[in-house]
Length: 366
Image (cartoon, rainbow, N blue to C red; front, side):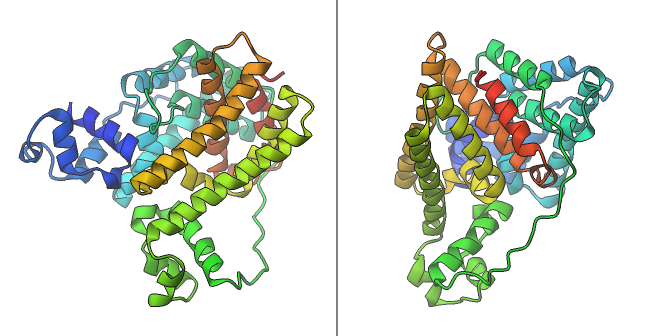
């Protein structure tokens, strides 16, 4: 009961925002009672993540592994969020264990999938394995309502991803290093330094002094541009959000119809995700760190953006429910994020085209 309540709080609010007193209140006990079972909050998070019985047997069929992953999500609906977002609050050795477990699941999915998809290369199999894992472990937004999912629709999307006829994928190439010295503006230089630091270490682990040191700025001069650390995060998130909205406006002006609009949106969102993975990491993981009022406003804008996709899809498929369209849209974006966060995959030739094929299949855009 303690682990279940804590898992939901961590998922909805973000681990740094949850205190032992919050967990105690959620289970109806005094905080002192928690310490009879757990030494601290970190131990609760660790057990909530590592207690999940993930499928690790490499001799299982693809369908069996997917069935077990789906059961994990059904019984522990916060698993995907904790694994993907909150695990970096754990000590490095434990975090490494979580990473290895995730890689093992993807590898076993790939091994099992290759039995029935012998025509695919190793890289194609890997893309499909990570995509199906992303779908199976959950796609709901913990900031927005009930994690319950339509299991039949999820199973359909899992089969769709596993059977997708994605194009050839070539070996990854090293990403070129920018030859531009940097921003002349101190404010922009600080923001450019903060975004990758927040994405790599997590917002809670980065100080304003860390950001200043990255661009050779120290002391009061930092606070001239960003009085609070949350101002840096807020600026980065709202900038990413505005980029997406501006791109949607461009798409709406050019599109011939709703189907064309969705196709163009998908294309541009994939490009944004592959080229701006640090922004994607912030959008996915750091929104709970915003102050309450800013978080509420940001989530409202984020949901409005998703709703534009959903309404377009509903016009393409008027027989579908709004809930089903939303699940398809959120799932598709979640899969794009999952591949974008794998450096060796996002730099592969053909991965953009593969994500377009997967995205069109998942939102049923044929």
